[in-house]
Structure formats: C-alpha cells, structure tokens
Length: 287
Length: 313
Image (tube, rainbow over all chains, first blue to last red; front, side, top):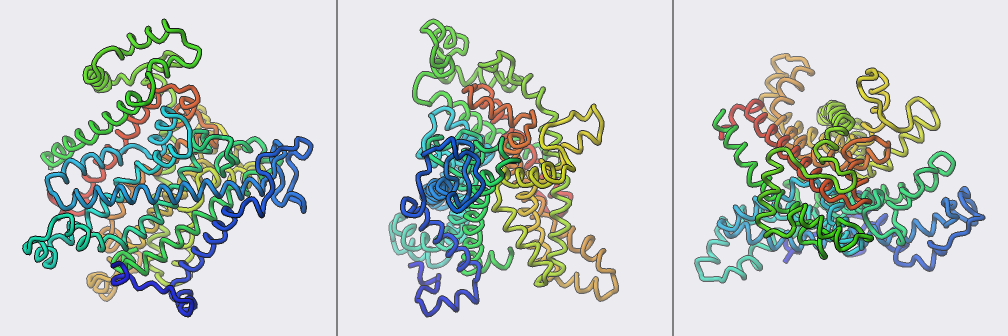
C-alpha cells in the first residue's frame, strides 16, 4: 500500500544514489545501526556493567577501561553500552505505543465529527500537562519499572499523533474517491482501513522518529531526576546523575553517557529529517 | 474583540477541567490505598485512618473531586504531606527563581532564535544557513542536563568566569542575580532556540518568495527594513504559535535545569517531592504548570489578532 506513495530506495544498487540525495538518512541510519548492534551484542563487546572495584574508582580512560571508571569503580564503557539498551528500548516502544494509540483515536475522531469534539478536548487537556511532570507523577504513584516509564512517556505523545492523523483524515474524507466508496456502500471499517489509513503512513513514519527522539530524551531526563528506570539498570540518565559530584575530577563519567545520548538522538533526528524530506514533500518545502 | 477574548477564556475551562480530572484520578486510581501510600511504610492503622478522614478519602469519589476543585478555584492547592505547609505557600516561596529563569530564558532565546532564523532565511542555501540549521538539529538532540554540565565544566570549572550553581535573589543586586542565571538560561534555552529558529526560517522563506517582497526590493527599500517590516511581520503568526507551544518544552526543561544548577525553584520542589511521595505538591504543581501553559497559549491566540488583523473569530 505504502509503496505506491513512498518510493524509498532499498535495493543495494541505490544506496549510493540515496547517499547523494538524502545524506541525512544514510548518516542517521548507519549511526543508529552501529549503536543498536552494540546494544544487542553488549555481552560480547563490553565487560560487566554492574561489578564494582573500589580500588579502581574514578580511573581516567585507559587501555583497560576505555572510558574510565565511575565513583564505585564500575567500567563506564560497559555501562554506556548496556545503557544503550534502555534508551533504544524506550525510544522504540514509546514510538510504537503512541503511534498505535494515536492512530486509532485519530482515525475515529477524524471520521466521526460527534466523537471528534469530545476526544480533541480530552487531548488538549493531556497536552497541557507538562510531559515530564506527568511521567514523574505516574512513576511516583505506581512505582518505577521500565514498562511504566514507557507508558508514562507515551501518554503525552498520543495527542500529537492523534492531531496528525485527524488532520489527514479530515483532508482525505472529503475527496471524491472516499465519497465514491461510501456511496457504493463500503463499510466504515473498510473505508478507514483501505482508503484512509494508507495516507497516514508517510507522515506517521516521520512523526514516529521524532517521538522516538523525544522519548529517549525524556527517559534520560526521568532517570536523571531519579524518577525513571529502576536504578539497578545502568541508563545514561542515571549514570550522569550518580556522577554529578565528580564533574571536576572525573568529567568522563558524565560526558561519556552524555555524548552517547546526544549521538543517538541526533541520529534519530537526522533520520527523521531525511525521511520527512523524502516522504512528505509538502512539509519539506515549509521546514 | 472582547467577545472573542471572553469566548477564548471560556474555552480554557473544559481543558483545565480535563487536566483536573486527570491529575485527581492519578492519585485515586493508583493501586493501593492513597492514605496508606501517603502515610508511608511505617504507618500504623490509626495514622492511615486519620489521614483518610483528613483528606476525606472516606467520602464518595465525586464528592472528593468536587471539594478538591472548589479548593483549587479558591487558590488552595492542598497541604504538603511532608512539611504540613500549604502547597500554595511552598510554591510562592520558590516562585522567584523559577520565574527569573523562565522569563530570562524566554527573552534571550526568542531574541537569538528569531535573529538567526531570519539570517538563515535571508541567506538561504549558503554556509550561514547550513550552520544555523545544523545548530538547530544539534540543539534538539542534546539533553538539557548534558548541555548544563558541559557549560558548567567549561565556563565555571575550567575558565572560572561564572558560578557553578545556585541562585541569588534579585534583591541582592542585579549583577549577582544575572550572573547566576547565565548558564542555566543557556542550557534551558538551547532546544527552544533550535525550535523557534527552525520555524522562523521556514516561515520567512515562505514570505520572502511573495511578490510584495520583490516589489519592496524593486522600489529601493533597504534590505533590513524589507526583512523586518515587510517579511518578519507577515511571517510572525506561525512563529508566535511555536513560541507558545514551546513553553511546554521550557516548563519540562525547568524541572531538570533547576536540578542541574541547584536552583531552589518550583521544579526542585517537585523533584524533592517525588522522593518523599508528597502527592499534594506533585498534583498542585502539575495543575499550576498546566494552567500557565494554557494561559500562555490563550495570550498567543489573542496576539494573533494584533499580528494579523485578517484573523477574526
């Protein structure tokens, strides 16, 4: 379905072509691939992220500890590699959850005007609550777990997806081919699935990358504030938080995870910008 | 005009009502007895019963919600579980640092963002444009606390130009106050600058392609007046919209920035409240921040009618 509107080069012969026309997609995707592979094969490339050796505390980067050690003598490189797991997991899951939920709500709201008013008011309300406070409150009430962090970060993203999907539905539902389908007696579910849904795919792919980037940032922020992923998991946010007192004597304990965080989010954003330019020329011209 | 403002003001009521329901239910739908959660782990049965009665948790849910809303409408955000002080008092005590930080950031960020955004649009396709856009993508990607520690490391620890952390009330002098705000504002403002610079460039590009811009150039108007008076004024509506929406970004950022720079503001109040599970503070500040966001966007909607007299509601 999507391939009709979305001619993305996938054959190997076209990679060079893609690199020339959308360098940001290639740069972003390769950066992400490297980080994802490192996270996936963490046990093979990094040592134990939890084991601590008080003798080795606050060691600067060396051949033995590539990125030095933290205040408990834990290997920063190992922790950074394992930390990528949480960031990527949260980023991808939040994007999937919020896009799925926003898609359903947006389709329904856009197609049925009566539902629309109520649903959109509700979404306005959620949007008004600062995302990080909402997540903090949810975590404070229900206790910290990775699953809850994903839900807590996804909820404030849902209104954005809903608005996007709704705007597509409103634009498309008045087009002659949808009218034709309706007048020939096609059932609502089929119209939404076959005739309207495909139009939302391209903008949603772009939106999903931006949500992924912002979810990774929010997760790091929550971990940094001590309201996110349980502290026994190494995350880039809690690594920075636990090293804040050592900024002067051991800056690597803060800047190693900080740089990774910035790189991942940059990679996702570059990918998103590239995809937007390729998939959504209407917006591309404006941005 | 007045009718429009009133109508727009009334439209904020359902939004705030939904915020209220959401924030209220957050505590009440949580697994377990809220009174037990509030009382803490070592509470006796009596303690829990006392809290339940004091908070009216033994009354029907709808009645509780009613009195809670009634209290908020009267400026009563509840009482902190930990310090037993009214949340309103606690927030007011810590309002100055937060307001100083956000307002300074807002002014500085908007000024920088619009300047570089206009520059990028004017010089579209050149190196200047690419540098600004590259900076914008970077600005979105680096988290507030990483920028914060980077700035502290360079400008406070290495160069020793500015203080590492803390806040000095404005009553103790303008310079000490400003000195302590420079690094936090820069850290907090980066993502906001990126956001606004991008929309400024996009919006300006669209306007600069219009015929009347070419006419203005042709009749000999100097470049700067063309950019500012002819173009920027007409590009303003989307920019102001994003400034309003971006306030959400600032509010979330403030919570983290205050933690990085040890600023005793409302954000720190919330973060300290998480550790103590002080729900009334978390709820109160959520309502307050949501209210600020809604108000700012109300102002944005009203500003539209000044920027573009064609917009009539």
